[in-house]
Structures are given as structure tokens and as C-alpha cells.
Length: 391
Ligand SMILES: Cc1cc2nc3c(=O)[nH]c(=O)nc-3n(C[C@H](O)[C@H](O)[C@H](O)COP(=O)(O)OP(=O)(O)OC[C@H]3O[C@@H](n4cnc5c(N)ncnc54)[C@H](O)[C@@H]3O)c2cc1C
Image 1 (cartoon, protein in one colour):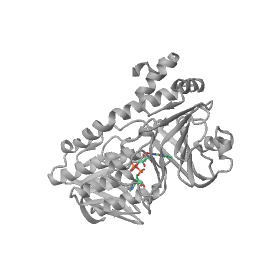
Image 2 (image 1 turned 135 degrees about the horizontal axis):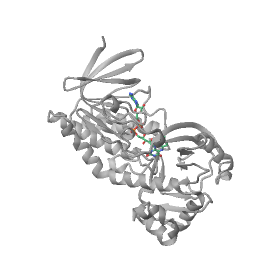
Image 3 (image 1 turned 90 degrees about the vertical axis):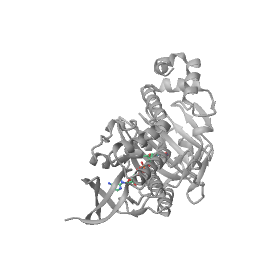
Image 4 (image 1 turned 120 degrees about the vertical axis):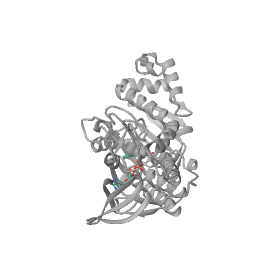
């Protein structure tokens, strides 16, 4: 017999940015909330390049406790080295220390009243009356926690939504496989600018990044459907890539691997007593692989909707559908257009990527994809075959 440890209104699975923001909003709205994390330390292991476009949108002050660098834009490099500089808009933001930032977000949720269980892995969900028994494994013990609503924020390898009967498994072809070194002694072009490198020999199906982090920089890449492993492409770039002269003295202080689900959102992110948030829901840009902001924002909405459902004593599918309506209103169009652009970029040869960079010119004042397309079509009409559906 499993012991029933306690009962909650809302159980959030996964203390990443999505889960901690969900727990924060749920507890703030008066629901008795438990946040469950399988790792023994929130924020570990890091699988991220740690760039986020805004903290201010969440009322979070960019504290030096977790902000390592302010970002003013990015340099995009074509395979032949042609550089396009992007400033302002979504290309700006911060590079954070995820180990500290994720813990900060969990503490913020706890300050609103959420309880946290660490080194506790959710291994199953059982329907129980009008709620769930969440089955948790902690050390060698298994126990059950009763709850009305579960928020599945368990990341790219999510199982929890599937336990609840939702279709949430990601197609392996839509997972970007990433490898990254955090390195010191990187000679940066500009300590406040991110660098992005594109090319079928550099990072097929993805791109390579250098994100400055103060004394260090995250140097990593993501690939899909590639012949070699992500780490092989990364090592090759360090040795022979476009930035090899600036990386020759670089040395790693940390190695990170992980997957980014870049296939777009899952079909349905709610059902009776369940909401799905963040990477688990495919709420991550298919173009850039950026998911921290989306996970946080969708987590906030999920927590609010869950809190309200508890107050009104109704956590049916109909009531919880408000979550999907609200997050889709804000983010769906953008996610789907990023998916289209990703599919275009991955079809291009290196010569076409070079032509694209040429067409974009030297400077862009924002990553406004519609402006991009207009400029490309005026300057390189030969690329029209890729972009005609977007006009
Ligand atoms: C190499 C790499 C670089 C990236 N760089 C960036 C970047 O620069 N900027 C950006 O915005 N995004 C980036 N991303 C994506 C970003 O990391 C994710 O989109 C973001 O972390 C999603 O947050 P989340 O809360 O949904 O999931 P996660 O942060 O993955 O959190 C999920 C949590 O759930 C826990 N968990 C999983 N299963 C269980 C279980 N059964 N029981 C209990 N706990 C469980 C996990 O331990 C984890 O803590 C990158 C991804 C990769 C792989």
C-alpha cells in the first residue's frame, strides 16, 4: 500500500521556469500548491544557453544575483562569414545563470505559499474521484499525493501529460539535439552581442551560438537529422570554424547536452484536471529554440487559470480550456510562423544562405520576420520559391 502523504489543490510537476511560474501564480491565487522536482537541486543540470529576451515583463528585476550579462543584439553569420547585425527588439535581453535563476523562481513561488518537494520523481497519475493521485518516487520510497489539478511542466522528456491521456510525445525528428560548452577566454566581437552561425556543415537543421556571459560564454549548437553527433560539429567549429582565431585560447568550465522540442505545440494542452506547460507543451520557438520566456508566460497563465478553477470549485475540461485560449491568443501565431521559417531555412543550401545574408544587408534593427521577407524578395528574387507562401 502506498502512503498518502498529503492533499493539494494543484500539483505542478517540474521546477523549471514553466513549473515555478505556474506554482507562483497558482499559490498567489489562493490554491494549496505543491511543486515537485526530480532533481536534488533546482536548476541542475543546466541544459540551456541561458538567454532570455525580457525579465521586466514578469515584474522581475534583472538582479546581478542571476543576470550575468545584458544583451544588446546579435551578429548572424552566413556560412561564408557574411555578417548581419541585429539590434533592438527580441534580439535584446539578458543572459542569466540558470542554476541560480531557476532556484530564484522556485523561491519566488514558495514565498507565495507553494510547497516544494525535491529529489521527487512523478512516476504515474491515477484518477481518484474528481482529481488525481500523483505517484511520487522519493529515494527508495513511493507515495501518493492527492490533488484536484495537475500542471505538467516536466520539460522535453515529459511523461505526465501522457499519463493523463493527452497526446504529448514529441516526434524525435522534431527534437534539436544540442551540445554546449561554457567557456572562458573566448575573444568576443562584442561583450554584449550574441553570435549565431548558420550552415549545413556548421550545424545542419539548427545553428551554432556564442552567448557572452561575463567571464565566460556559452558556445553551443543544435542539430537535427545530422550525420554526426552535435558534439562532433561543436568540436569541429572550435578547431576550424569561422571564429577559430577568437576561440583558440578558450577552455571549458562546463559541458551541457540536451534536446529542444522544435516541432511546434502539442495538439491539446488541457483536459479535466490537467494543464501542460513549457517544453512539455511544445511552447518553444521552432526557429530559435528559445523557450524560457514562453514557459514562464504560459506557466503564469496556467497557474492563474488553475487558481481560479479551484476558487470556483470547477476544474473541468471546459473551465481549464481558458488556459489554451489565452496562451494561444498571445503566442500561437508567432510559434507557427517560426515553424514555417525553420522549415524554409533547413531546405536552403549554403549558397542560398549566403545569398540570403547578402539580401538582408549589414544591419537590421529588429528580428521582424515580415520585414526580413520583404527585404529578401526585393534584393534576391531567386529565393522567392522559399518565401512565396509567406507573402
Ligand atoms: C542546449 C540548449 C540551449 C537552450 N538555450 C536556450 C536559450 O538560450 N534561451 C531560451 O529561452 N531557451 C533555451 N533553451 C530552451 C529552454 O532551456 C527550455 O525551453 C526551457 O527550459 C523550458 O522550461 P520548462 O520549465 O518547460 O522545462 P525545463 O526547464 O526542462 O524544466 C522541466 C523540469 O521538470 C523536471 N522533471 C522532468 N520530469 C519530471 C518528473 N517525472 N518528476 C519531477 N520532475 C520532473 C526536470 O528535472 C526539470 O527541472 C535551450 C535548450 C537547450 C537544450
